[in-house]
Image (tube, rainbow, N blue to C red; front, side, top):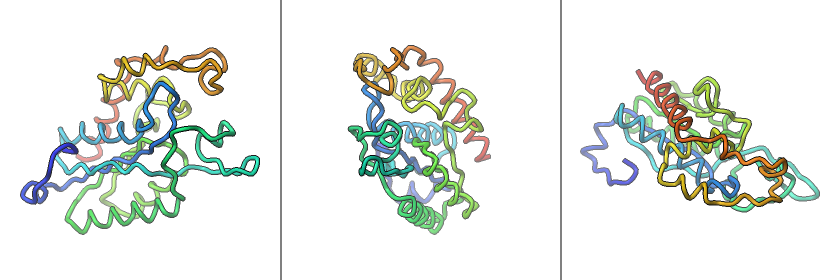
Length: 224
């Protein structure tokens, strides 16, 4: 759906809209900076194969907690590590994200969509909290955070770019596995290599497929 054109004859048939949301964000050397929205997109496409609907282009901006450290405003993983990380291009204030997604939801409702599935590949607490507010306002909205234990028992929000997220990305994009494995994690990487750990060692395509299936099945249950 995301890779082809949509004419009105097709568009008018759809009663379900799928909105993938993610970020362009640092994910270490071993995952692409587009991981969050690419995973959200693939989840939406997988569900749309079972329950047809219009898959919107990914929304790749998001929000996160922010904190001033040593005179510099740091957000998300930057805040956690106390320094600017390369690759993060996503930040919106919670208010701007709220107003933007709220307007988009209202547009979709005005076009006759009866169900709107929002999938966020970025699980920062401010992101989840902001979209949850919108979900609570509009009955047609189904909000899915793939890394919530209510959605997937095998996923884990505590590890950014950790083994579960790696596994899920691999399941969504198997052709990227070798490239991901070939990327070297610097020995001075103070997030992944500070204890000699490489999260890819616990990641697997099989685990990713289990997580992906859990997420897709949960969304389908919510749509029925």
